[in-house]
Length: 162
Image (cartoon, rainbow, N blue to C red; front, side):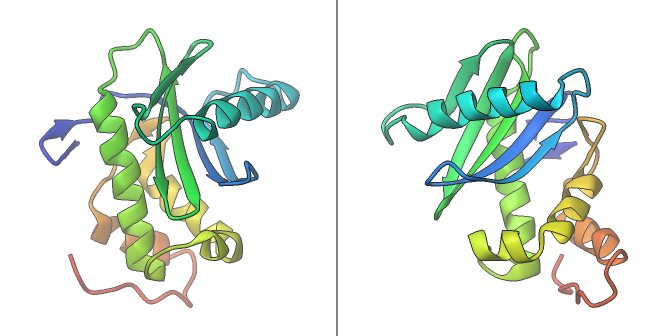
């Protein structure tokens, strides 16, 4: 898939984290099943601390252990995406993917905030499942993602905007 002229279909995502400014994880989605639960929590804590302590002047990429992470702050939430550090994944593609996720959530909930994430966590998982399958980005068209994820919850009304 191509988003904003950046090829991002070839990247394999290992995890997606949504974290607030206090470091509390609001969503953790892992696509690497080799990590045990306690290893995930430890890794998550380390990465979150590294991302939250960085200043606004520093770049949005962090290498930690065997992962390369891209993060972006939207209001009070940090969106963090991790891929293999030794892969040839496009860093700008990671940022574009994060932005696409946020735009999709904005379309569904209107200027998404931390409370929307907490109240509609199941909806967020459905949206991510439509966009990413087994770590591979499979769909980036916001209209299609919202239409397909809306099928899981008949109460959701999907905007008619493409």
